[in-house]
Image (cartoon, rainbow, N blue to C red; front, side, top):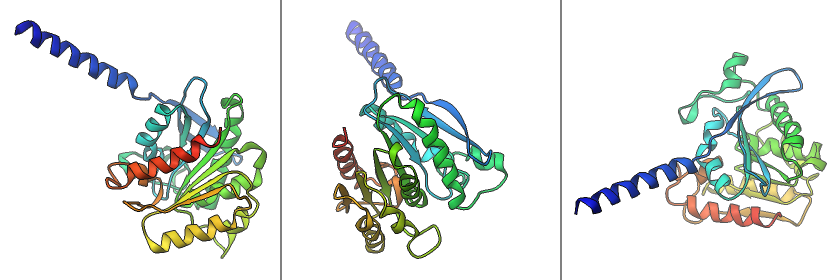
Length: 249
């Protein structure tokens, strides 16, 4: 009996070690935007990745929004960079280092420079792998502006809860009309958000586009993939996202 108990304890220790070893350990990255602002991020690196995904957070947030999401992406074979944009805050129990150093939270459109800094950085980091933009709430609108401006650098785009958050009645839709790469759009399980997402995805200038409407559960932004924020629908949303990603390469 004692031998068996010792064996079980040893096996449990091995399982714990294995679980901790499986946790991604991101590398800290500091980028410099075109106007000189320092942009802080976490780089989740995978050997021979299927793609490099650039992860951008929602308003009042930071790269901590993506901690469990990046872990899942790594498990699926994707490298990822999650940054603190200059428009953000202290959601998810973590401070936004970019905002902290800047001294204030900036405007949504100002954060476009941060997304572009990440895209510039990805050219070397991707080492030939496709680069994918991924945005949440206001950044899910900004990714259309970035992709329209530098289409040669972007292989695909995922947008979680987009809308006309950037000023003007059709700023995002006008940018979407210039996007010809595969696009995935989703939103909360909310009629208004679904309708806003539909307006954006309808403007995209390619037939390779998907609007996923959650049936079990959906919340605003990329948090729809977090089990702690969307316990009923996270798995369903992940299935749709991975189906889209697997179709790119």
